[in-house]
Length: 499
Image (cartoon, rainbow, N blue to C red; front, side, top):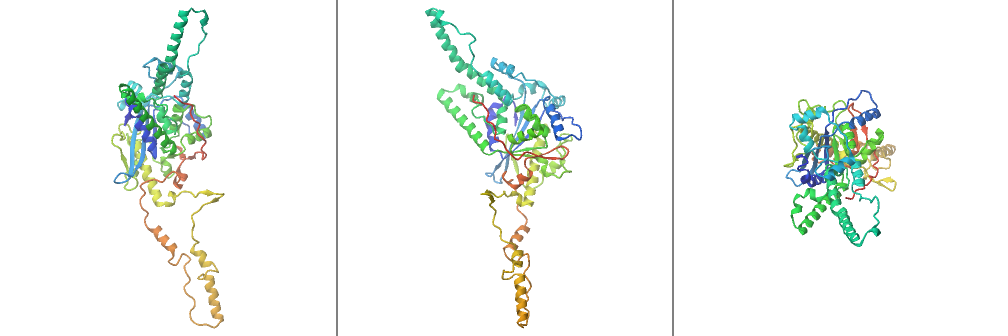
């Protein structure tokens, strides 16, 4: 689905619901050229190059695909909802409030020529991308505007009303009441709506980060018809709208989705600097912040061998052949695009055909690995009172075979044979010793079950599984190095926002 500033507010509740219900969310960003990075740089040097690069270029398109497992279908599969957002740094100048916001932020920006040429090739002129894009405020910009934009005016010099005559004092009291009422109600309401309208895509970002958005979104922006209905119905519609947003916010914060990316350290840097604020000074600080805002992140290329990573090149607007072959293989999880929310293939670099194949390929490859190595689907045992609560496992047959106190062990049989020979008994008392691997007991039955072909995996396990412990929260750098994100998740600071 293509989303711009014309249909953004009407679709925003649906977008927030899709994010809240998703098990996986794939994120892609375009609008900046590849950073020209010298070879043999350390991670810190590479990070400093990306920090400088992220200060120059502006994001023009953002793609999201939300994958939710749907058990209600005849054949259980993931349902996919894809959204392509056009993003603009421009401020809406429809009224004086919007102009005041623009002056308060005083934003600077620049575009990549290659990006603009690419947009033009695919039917997006510069003016169209500029005017139709969804506006946004970064977190730090929103907080700055709130502090300066929503504060009441302060009187520079108080008026000495004792010098006024009775008629003037009466007029002054009336004017003061009218102005105060306007400041508290109409003026503040108009400014809140202007701030919410300019925040725009920030509400989608807050949903991705597990943040707060339910009380910040103005119902009048999403419910265009609410102003033409009577007061009672209007209040009912607004109340139902607020309840829907709060429910989505609660679901989103209760269970965070798994973020799928494709080896894009530069994308994470641009996303952070655009929508959150200045990047941390050190690379270690950046990885901690990324793990803080995205505690469940997976690189699509982590399951491929080191020397066989799918190439990010598009070869004439076609995804990597590795992704196509993996995505089109039979078996494994099925993915069904929801009607009206299909991916777009007019721009391979946006979250369309390339993003679609990379997501599907990851699910297929992961399912095959889980089918082959079933232990990856299990969860780690819980810690209780300083010990590990482990599943009870019977001693192996080798233990019973070599245990001298066991009735049929090798040692006990040898003792029996020696006693028989010493007492002059004849005949064969030596039976074939039991196998150290079992004699038809439960252990052999378990081995037979393991030899049977494991069933196909149609749904990836929850985040607590060993699979994600092994492959989650790691980024694959361009030269093949696997970067592990921090394992500690610091508490997220609550935003000071209450519009």
